[in-house]
Length: 438
Image (cartoon, rainbow, N blue to C red; front, side, top):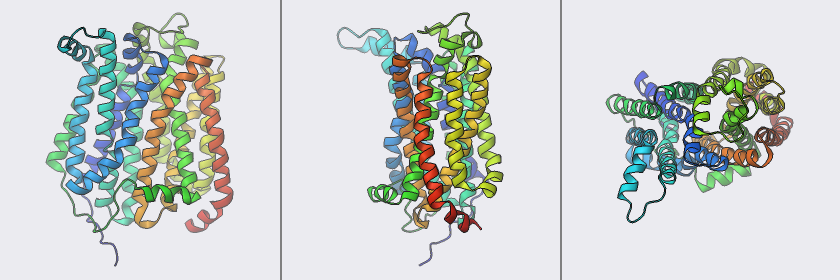
């Protein structure tokens, strides 16, 4: 029996899905410049800072499948709106972590731990809570599949990719600027955005009938085994994982690297190996601006240039070029003798990530069975979350043990593995993909 065609979506559902993913990633990006400030203020080490970055994505990795299954039972709208409300609460806790810790201290039975330790615990709790509710991004992918026709499916999924790129791009810059007004303001703004999107979705979003028997779960054990049994899928997932692992390491350690090696470009007069809260606070604005430029280049490539490059070169060639350029950018930053070379590396780096991300997604989609594309793309998202969880703490350990440039060199080493996999993939499957496209 042929699969029933889903109803074509109006503009409101797709706009809401875009807002859901965009706000989720915008809030994630807003707090990126602030995490080093907060953690340093309350005595966190560089390794603990890495864990603070990574725990958000770790929760997304763990709970994305659960939210997919819950949305199968109770509907996409409830999960998406509920996730936004929970995310708003998490950002408020983050913004007012000092005050929350003080309340906890007063209510503590017996002698309370030091207020710095309690506040750091509140920060971790807010990030864990944000990751738990932010894992509903997988439900957004399932909703796109519900409301788009097969011929428009790729365009709809591309909307999620655009929202990811813009959220990561704009968030750090917004967070850096807002932090100059008030240390609480970034959390308040992120919470307000989530609450606004939740209200919009409750009013405008309508549930749609899902095709009987459609597999909209993010993944099952059979699908995980199937992914690694088919090299076309397993290798592509590995390439995507290593690229996100490297990029997340760069994002997490960039501000500490800048303060240690190029302090004048981060608002400091001298190199700072062990930054204080005030140092990190002053540098947040500059780091946000630099990351904004990196994100904008990547967003332009993923949103526009990739459409011109894929027909000319094919996904398998671009999947090779992506980790090569990303690794080259990281090496240039790590070896940079002057800040001009840091800028050069920061220009090369997003070209690599911008080529890699959509190319790998396309390879996963084209290699997946027709009735399981959403499941395998969901598995790719979960692995990306795992990479964002592991990248920052691994980079933090490298920073502490081997110096400011070590996180970038080790990330480039991982990309050398990704390049080898991509080259083998191109040699083995490139011709068949080219024939299918012609």
